[in-house]
Length: 300
Ligand code: CDT
Image (cartoon, rainbow, N blue to C red):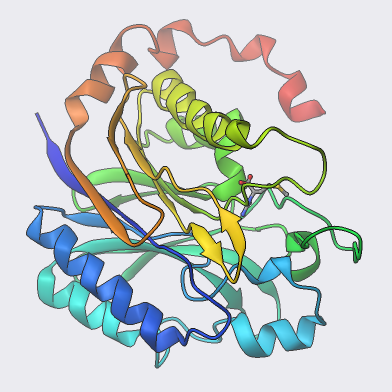
């Protein structure tokens, strides 16, 4: 059956003082390691070029100046494209996108092994708030800094497989995966920044990891997909985020998982035939789905 070498490159913390250039050097080192470990494709995190800036209260103009990419590739990110082409490896990269018309999105791109951007996704499920919460230990201002994505959940044919993308909080929603599975996605790739402390309610810290894993595992199984998820994690200037980057098989089982909260590559050879088995049998959509009973999902 068809196989693809799939790697996840987890990033440890990026502090406010760290330059994009230094982050790109870290990404390049992991891209080379991924290739050395037989990967055809490597997944980098959400907002992978800077610290997780939605934790800081600031005006939009300041955020744009400091944290958004005006072009992709740009001067700081061009080396990623050059190295990917040289190595012949595709990648997913999350970044804050400023469009030519000044619109702001939390974005991910799919880059093929010839370094062409073949797909773009803009985050749909934006968590957090838009108002200042001075009493909270930190902010989660995605609803202030980003618009809801306007591209839907696409699926692209690249490196010989059908690949879909989502970003962080999207991974907790079943509709995310189902919409991609209905377009025959075989792999869903994503990056995330998940603070280990929930500022909205007193969530036990261990649930941040278990709800992350259960979301990926259940949705991989229920859609007959491989899922590859890359964290940015550890303490960014003291603000801790969970690790546990994983590659999940269509069986729902974790086949690779990071051990650290630092830069770390995990890799596997993903057998796409496993997904086909599930999609031919228990989750044969054409035979067994009953969309006539699912209408409420799009009505409310
Ligand atoms: N980056 C991101 O989407 N993080 C969210 C945190 C939610 S708490 C406001 C997540 O779902 O992991």
